[in-house]
Image (tube, rainbow, N blue to C red; front, side, top):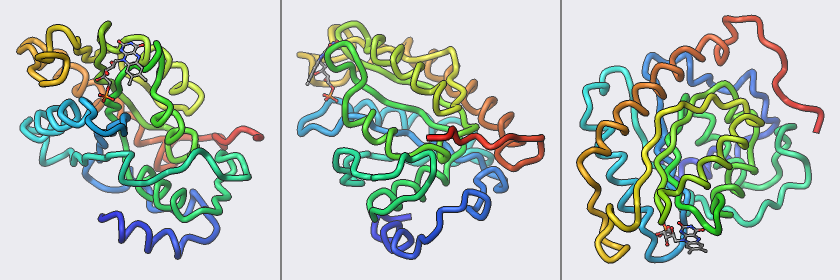
Length: 228
Ligand SMILES: Cc1cc2nc3c(=O)[nH]c(=O)nc-3n(C[C@H](O)[C@H](O)[C@H](O)COP(=O)(O)O)c2cc1C
């Protein structure tokens, strides 16, 4: 769905009942988002996220898995400006509603993230913080990059995933600015990353499917929203 269409949907979005949302798990295709977490002009992230998306599309999962490239930048999210905590789903802003509709449509995520100051880029953390239930009971994997492979960013993201009730898989892809980029800018990934990528995606797909029972309410399920 285009961003314009999403914004149109967002205008119609009234009470964000997560029960009446179309459950992504009810569809036969598993929907996996490749989420690009950096937004700065000249970012390396774009080439990395495109590589991830292209490799995912090239695999033989296309009859059962649908991949979508999501660039946080396209959603023009400001610094979190919702007065009510996102876990309550009472969104007041059109940009939040558009982001909510989009993220709710997925069953699993691949986060493509750099490391900024030994941590998660603020843009990605801010985008994550806008929502809550849209993330719950889904799977996630990581592709990171940086001078130390972006590992510290992913370690922090794993802590955040727990609070969002996202099942984050063990296998991950860590790309080095020294060996996977020419002059730190031209992306030239070593061939061996493809193996890690496939392991990571296999795990994301398996867990994404396994959690479908929770997303569709087939298993006894408690309200996942915390009090605030
Ligand atoms: C604000 C900022 C902080 C950074 N801090 C780190 C860091 O702590 N560790 C690291 O390995 N690289 C760091 N880098 C280098 C980034 O890994 C590198 O610039 C990468 O390309 C950033 O991703 P992007 O191009 O998609 O924005 C930093 C870059 C920026 C812009």
